[in-house]
Image (cartoon, rainbow, N blue to C red; front, side, top):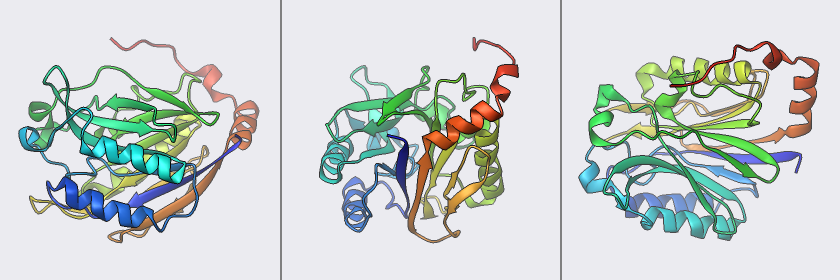
Length: 258
């Protein structure tokens, strides 16, 4: 399909309480417009907790089962990250992407936020993941990944990027600017979802969720410090037309990650 209608949920999160968060999110989803894709924040079931022994759920766990239920109920893909304990007993910050037919794809966060000790609590992912959904190629990214443009460089293999986050209020300007920069340099839509409120350590989150088009122009945004839903419709034909008119990717430097 040429267009993709997206809903980004900017919400508070209950600290380390999966049941409470899923209950809250269930109520919020009930009021959504019909969309193709629903985006939830990073670690939407627990908040950004480094107590991985307590919060990491087995696979499949309660949050993943809930995602599958919501995708089927609303006939929309739904995405958000969860602390997961793998079958190999590794803890990862896993971004799930679940489609209405129950198919599950995921990306494990590569760049772990060392300033919070995430690199001690979780294991970094190694694979870049692009999902195909309703004719769209979508790159999956999590929070701190936003600061590392080499990893997200578009090799003409995606049309949109998802960034889910628990991005603290003191660094809101970086979040805002970098989302637009990633859109410009990669000629792709960016769907940025951040939480609001306060976590269990007293850290404040301003939200500032944002949907950016391939020109780097914000096409939908939410006020800081307010819970709510952000809607926008991305247009694949318009994206392709712009890339043909302004094919900057043809002059990009070639490189390989090691």
